[in-house]
Image 1 (cartoon, rainbow, N blue to C red):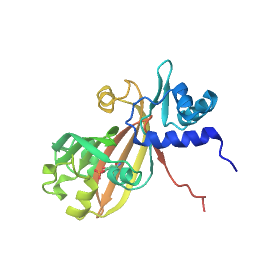
Image 2: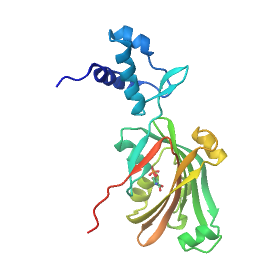
Image 3: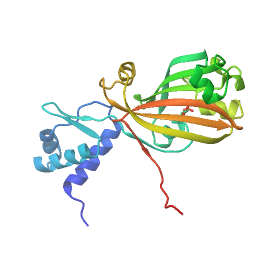
Length: 234
Ligand code: GLP
């Protein structure tokens, strides 16, 4: 079976997109047709296909641009670092806040601590290939992990530190997923329009029978999706 010409062209552009920075303009339809010797109709179909796949965005009157990645991750007890590496992205983080804070009523009840007890609050902007993917606010049971508040989480995976340096064995987790509207400050940090929809993932994870982490991750709806394996009811 022969591959249609526009598909071949789309493949070639796809390879270029993979190397191009997010937001950079792509060759115009006319230029593409001239450069490759195909008709403008074929060039348009190739570009249309990539727009449909979400690899390019079209802006009326301006042209097409390399789109921000939509990161798709499975629903499981893995870390942001692992999820991004497994999908071929380079993860990085900016620490927005790190330090001990007194547990309020809600946090205290989640961790079964007395209100006012020390917990660590770690707030990070998480990026994939330099593109903001999430803001994560993690509360950690600090008492079990002495010195954790001094670790530089701009260059560390929280789960790696917990597992390798503190002997954590994740044995259970619960994840609540809900839709929300980005808070204004979060929208600015994530570089999305005010009022944009976000997905909030709230994870509670347990090691040695105790809740050790309670994290709310806020993902732009336009850059992130979750997938889960579903099995028939037995
Ligand atoms: C995921 C989870 C969070 C967890 C984080 C740890 O994003 N939803 O609950 O805190 O991974 O990520 P890392 O180990 O990369 O710091």
